[in-house]
Length: 149
Image (cartoon, rainbow, N blue to C red; front, top):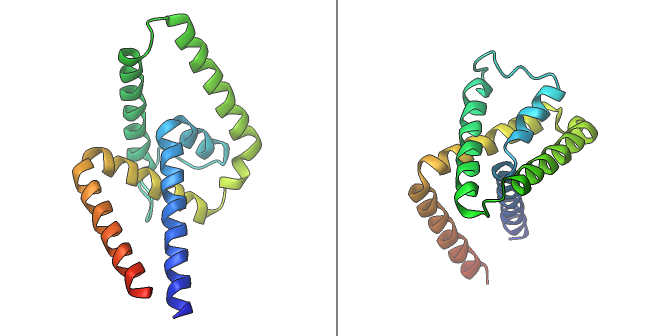
């Protein structure tokens, strides 16, 4: 029984970590390409056996453009303030990549990063499907919790 509980806990931890990574990427999609470049990962060579950065990164750029367009609608019309905010975000991303890119250098971590990016893109193309999957996962988790108690 402990093994099942431990597995379920690890599974939830992985799901939580993936969601946190996806949230961060969604907020700062530029950081992905910067991390890959800092680690010497080819982003233009097409697909490998496990990743297709050449297709994934342009799709992330589209998300960024959509975010910027939405911000222009939602935020104050103060262009100077918006430009300053963008500059601050860019500077913080550059510092993060400069100081932390080696943490993202292993194949396993880069695969996790890629999987998170693909998950974001799938969610943006099929938000209803993703919501239904989350509902099913929550129902299954509730069932498992009730069964374990």
